[in-house]
Structures are given as structure tokens and as C-alpha cells.
Length: 271
Ligand SMILES: [Zn+2]
Image (cartoon, rainbow, N blue to C red; front, side, top):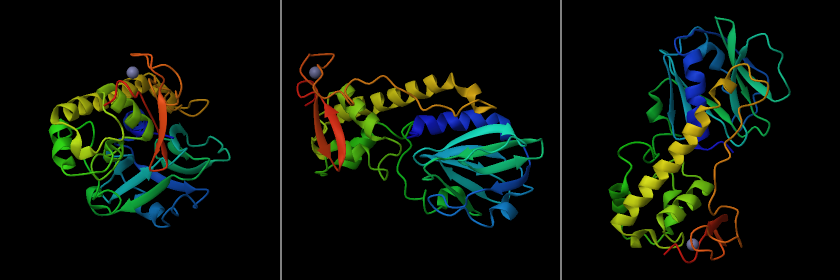
């Protein structure tokens, strides 16, 4: 599943190729994504210039003078720049064709992705307006996590995966960051110290930035690539490693369930 680093890498991969370009037309081959592709998309986006390619959480924001296209990659979506005449494959559901002869092609085998159109500022859209902090923004730091977690009995892992608090911390990144910060995933969020939250915010930014840097090496794949841009295989210390020795203390890694998701942690290194 594309996580925040893949979405950010996608943004950086496509932005130089479509910013300033004029949309000629939209080709929708399958409207039935997670939500139906809006029928007015062609008339709203056609003829518009892409002014910027932004991101909020895992939404890509293609802003024009007429409104903004919000695009979510879902579970299996990807975007590529192609020659507009390139024949579509089975899961190539939407093309945004530009007047320069290239197109932005949206491919999504599982169809959990979605496209939305809004004429209002994107930050006011119902899918975006209630979202918490961006983890790579300066406003996201240990003091913020400490302040927002006071008196909360929720497990710290579920707290940092709550998108009203901070966006884009997926299940794997949550387990890995808590391991690196030495925090037990089931500890009550309100019972984690300010210093521990400072460390946690730092390692969250570190693992996300590492993944984005790693993805930077794949940016050329966004243009006329043979396959799809791959999702990153990051180095994992605990995730998926139940029973294997902790790389730090050799005690076997444990797996527990939290909110129907698997959590992996070291019972000795994480308190
Ligand atoms: Zn350990």
C-alpha cells in the first residue's frame, strides 16, 4: 500500500512534468473507484492550467484556477507520465491528457483510489479539513504530541496512528518508530514523557525522510516506465519479525493485536 513517503515521491516525480501544463481532456475508462469519478471532472478540469502539485496527508492536490483535483492512491494506485497515445492496460482507469501530447495516467488494480473535485480551497474539503499535523512540518514535534496526549488512556501506537493527531503514520512506520524511540506500543499515550515524545517525533521524521530519499532514486520511473513505480521496501527492525531476536538485546520480538492491527515490539527495549 502506498504510504506517505510513496505519495510524496509520486508528487515529486510528476510535478515537474505537469506543472504549468494545460489539460486538454480527461479520459475515464472506469468511473467506479472507491467513490465514483465525478462526471463534471472533464468540463471543470479541461482547458485549465495545473498551477501546482501539492500534498496533504495521502491526497495529491492538483490546483488550477478553477478548482483543485484531490487524488488518493488507495491500496494499489499509481501515477505515471506517458505518451497520450499509449494504449491503456486493464487497470489504467483515468488519463489526464495535456496539450503537449503527454498524459498523467492513473492505474489502480484494486480500485480503492479516488478522484475528487472541489472549487473551494482544498484545505476546506471535507476529506482534508479535520486532518491533524503533517509529520514533516515543523509544527509536528515532541511538545505537540505531549500536549495532545495528556490524560489520554489510548495506547500510544493508536494515538500516533490517529489522523486527527498526525497524518500518514501507517502501521509499519508506527511499530518501527516506537521501537527506535524505546516506547512500549501499549503504553497509555498520556503516560509517555515529554522527552520520549521528542525522541519519537524525531525518529518518525527520520524514518519518513529516509524512505522519501530512497524513493528519490526511482523518480525517473514516473516517466514512460515499463512497469509501475514500485513501493518502497524499507529496512525493518521489528515489523513482521515475531520470534526473531531483537538486533539490540537479542530478546525475541513479540507480536500483539491493537485495534485489529498487528504490532511488533521488543519487550526488553521498549518500556
Ligand atoms: Zn531489544
